[in-house]
Amino acid sequence: MSTKLELLTPLNSPQLSFKNRVVMAPMNRRRAEGGIPGPSSIIYFGQRASAGLIITDNTAITPNGKGYLLTPGIYNEAQRASWKKIADEVHRHDGKIFMQLVHAGRIGHEENNEDNSSLVAPSVVTAQIDIRIAEKGHLPASQPIALTTKEVQELVQIHIEAAKRAITAGMDGVEIHGAHGFLLEQFLHPHTNHRTDQYGGNVVNRSRFLLEIVEGVAAAIGKDRTGIRLSPYYKINDLPLYDEELETHRYLTDELNKLDIMYIHLSNRLIDGVRIIPQDYLAEVRKRFKNVIILAGSYTAESAEAALKANLADMIAFGRPFIANPDLVERFNNNTPLTQPKEEYFYSGGDIGYIDYPALSDSCTTVG
Image (tube, rainbow, N blue to C red; front, side, top):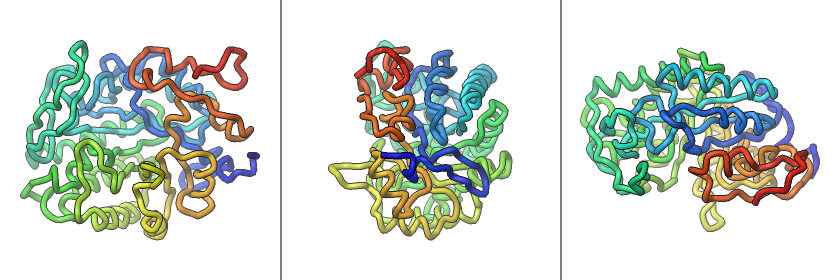
């Protein structure tokens, strides 16, 4: 493998320029006490700043929107100040970083919320999943409270304020989490959205919350600083496939194209050797959306290169490979074997399995 890989070439879009097409995917490493990223997070992101773009852990916009134990937030000044140190470190290494904004909705447990506040959702549909609680192991997800119309509109504004706070923290932009069964997708999905107001019913109404957030964020911080993550066909967090899924995502793609935002980031998981998003639909997204497309989901350097050459994407996001290979871009460039991550430290372990994976230039023994 050589530097002639398209994956390693710069991407000069009309909005932002990236030194390569390798994206560090958003991964919730769950090491933020009180929702505040600690000093080790500065090291963690700085180690990986050779990526063309880093997308942060999913970062909660409210205390009851974090979903999981030790998820970072961006809803108070202490959190913003810590993220500012991280952004500064990434920029010191000539990197770019977007913050992924999340509200988990019905995914979570009220005991993980600092104020024990209730979960909220489009409708009262409890997720049939278990959530890890501090010192209690795993418990069933809490039952959510249905949002009023006024509260839905307030959450649009809360997303906008979180985006503005992220920019003041030095972020180059934000990625709105509209995927993986969290709140925005709960509004999209008829299994979790039984509403009868303007945010429920048909595809247009169920898409309204997500699109109002994207439009508001783009207006507040700039469309060139705004991206979104979507996960069509991904059965996750107790959401099944549904009949209007293709129609919904065609509509979203067209509307997002009108808003002219920076990128769409599609979660394209590989299951039993088959990707969940049909290639025909990926080609359709390319025709419908004029700006940057990012694909994520168990890509290798080889499969990433194939997707780029087939013009299905402009950038490829890597998750697990970045956990154990802070210098992933250099390894791709040199065709160096990748270190395998220790899964037992994905969501806990402090600095172990977080900042102790060596780069090729380190003299210590490879972890793995």
